[in-house]
Structure formats: C-alpha cells, structure tokens
Length: 270
DNA sequence: TATATTTGACCACG
DNA sequence: CGTGGTCAAATATA
Image (cartoon, rainbow, N blue to C red; front, side, top):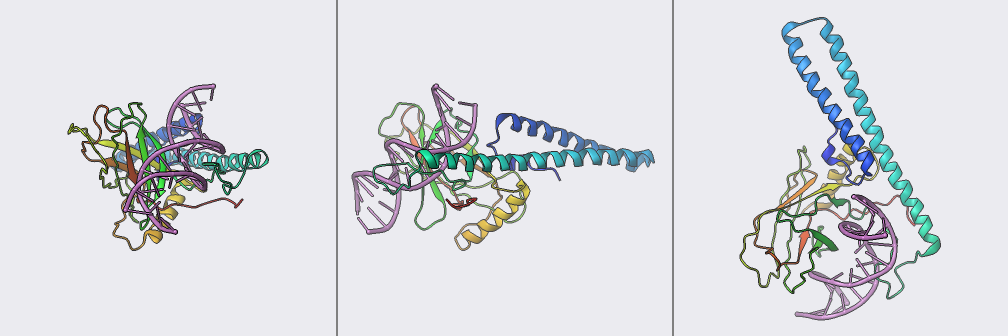
C-alpha cells in the first residue's frame, strides 16, 4: 500500500519533493516496523502487540494520507499556475500560431508530453539536450531528438529510436524496452560507448498518482490497440544497449522513439 | 538570472 | 505534398 514514489511527478518544486521524500521514508520505515511487529507477535502472541500494531497502522495511514494530500495539492497548484500564466499571456503576447514566421510561438499546453527526463546524462557523461519531438507516421510513438550539449558540433550525428511499452497488469519499477537504431552515424569510431540510461517518469495530470496510473495504462492500451507492441510495465526507463554511438566528440545527436501515446489532455480549452 | 525543455513552425528532401 | 529533422519562442526549472 505504499505509494510508489517512482511513479510520482518529478516536476515538484524542490521543497515539496523533499517533503515527500522524507514522508515516504517514514512510510517505508513504518512499514518495515509493521512487518517486524507482525512477525514477532505471531511468535509470542502478546496482547499488547495488537495495540502496537494498531498504532503502527495509524502511523502508516496518516503518512499515506499526508502523501496523498500533498500530491493532490501539488497537482492542483500546477493546474492553477498553469491557467494563471495562460491568462497572463493572453493579454500580452498570446497569438495563435497561425501567423507566419513565428516559429515556436504558441501557448503552452499542459500535457502533450507527459514525460519528463529525470536524468539527462548518459553514462559516458555526455549531457543530452532535447531539441525536438515528432510523431511518426504510422505509429503512436513520438520521436524525440536529442543533441549533445557539448559544442563540438561536427557533422556527425546519429539517431536512436526506442520504443516503449506498457503492460496492463502490475507495475514494478519500470522496465521497458527500447530499440535503438542509429541512423546516420557517419564517421563513428567503433569506440564502444556503453550503455545509456535515461529515466523518465510520467507526470500526472489530475488525481492521485495511483489512480492516474491505472487510468492511463488503460487508455494507452486502448489507443495502442493493434500494433505489434506488447504492453510492459508503466513507468519508463529506457536503456539503450551498448552502441558505438558516441565517441569522444563525434556524435552529437540522437533520436528517441517512445511507445507512448501523445496524450492530449487539457484542462479546459482555450 | 541562467539553463533546459516543450512544441508549432519551418524547410529540405523524396 | 507529405515526412522527417531542426529551429526557436515560450515556458519550466534550478
């Protein structure tokens, strides 16, 4: 019954995030304590142990509650500030991107991309900056384009396509698969640069994390229906297998492909 | 404030 | 003309 922290929105403000982390720790501790008590009370069968267990139960419940409240507050705040900034920008500079020559001039929507990168450094210490995302023609996965933050920009680049999946069933800390194919790795040294791990977490939209999680996986299943995907567990962790994709300074960009649906949730249209 | 991400527009290519 | 890749303004986060 612990709330799965890893499924939580990563975009909390630092303080709140810390609070939650602390609470979760307390929760886990209480959990363990409960288990311990449970075991020992089975052996000894004390009467007072039931009282203790009740107490632990209470602690656990209150921790749970607190966490739930905190998370819901957070999401409420998010949506509030969102609408606020929307209104704000309506006055000054909001314009429909109908006008020409105004690339990237748009009002930001909320959850077109419900995933955020938690770790942006690959194992080799390269930092990748996302510079674009596109949907692919026949599949639901958007494709993300990353570029190395380092400034040695020489022509070579490469593309990594990963596909991700979910499972309707249970969730353990996400494991998902990726297919990587580098696309134009022109002159790459065959320096076997290792394994790149990127971890992403889903950003929830409205309710408690667990609820959303369930809902989402259902919806995704719905949407992804008849492709050749299998559904794997929910949150994401993408692991690219060893690929000679990035040498000291040759490769500068890659591209990722997720098996996620382009969620188009909006709170209210405007 | 600086730095990173999001996302529609732009553009080259087939 | 559709598609994939990139740009860059708007936005988010540190």
